[in-house]
Amino acid sequence: MPGNQSQPAGALSSAAGAPPVVFFDGVCGLCNRFIDFLMATDAGRVLRYASLQGETAAARLSVEDRDRLATLVYADEAGLHRRSDAVIRILHRLGGVWRPVSWLLRAIPPPVRDAGYRLVAGTRYRIFGRRETCRLPTPEERGRLLP
Image (cartoon, rainbow, N blue to C red; front, side, top):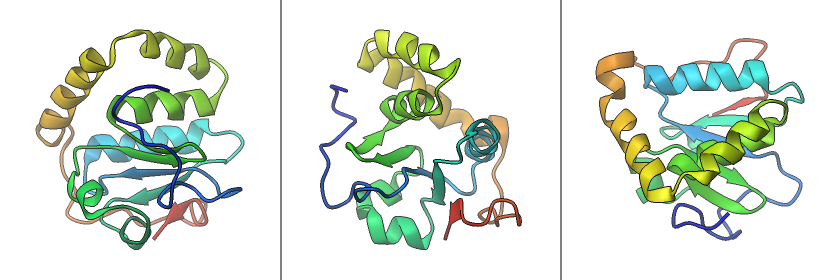
């Protein structure tokens, strides 16, 4: 997908054959709700999840990506994707009804999409709250929620 929020596959992207990973702000209420939605919707259990504050992010992402807690990062076989590009690629990966939704979102010019993304990201703590600590995996989530 064209746009400046994605980068080509490289050392920090998902390794060949490795499952794609959604990196999120582990203390953000909205982010955790999005991860809950993804876990419930990902019927094939393909996606893995890691907080930007965790060990997996420290090993796989740049300091800049880890410090930008207002930016969702998605690592797949094509590379790293951020903000609205990450959301679109994740929805496309889910398939089903979410694939056409991803196509509709992709039709919106990236600067407009990312302006909307930044608006939500800037108010997410006030609206959805902030946790004191990152989420811990439930027994059902183990193996999908990375350290």
